Image (cartoon, rainbow, N blue to C red; front, top):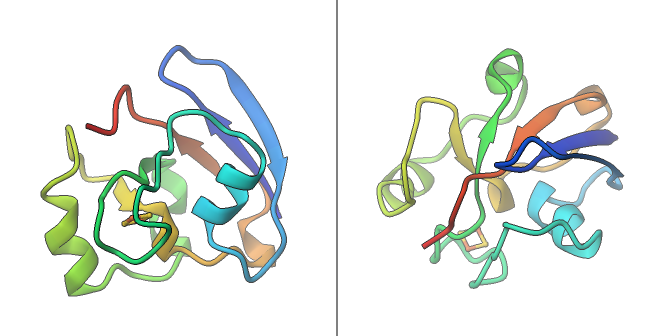
Length: 105
Ligand code: FES
């Protein structure tokens, strides 16, 4: 699916991510800055924190209790916050907007 990343300064980058990868894997593979993903997707670092576009919140898999708990360690958690290693890319996510926070730590 083709995803749009918007950094804290407003710069946009379109990235084609293979279905079945996580958003984190796709973003890191494409060299998107600002997603540290220190734990490599093991749900133990909270440095893959992103804000989803409002329209997309209910169009991705719901967050687990574990993700919810770990998100409390993310900087500046908001209602649209997710850990993007926990979201698998699928075809219906085409056009999705993802905002990258100012900092991960
Ligand atoms: Fe560490 Fe997502 S990469 S929690």
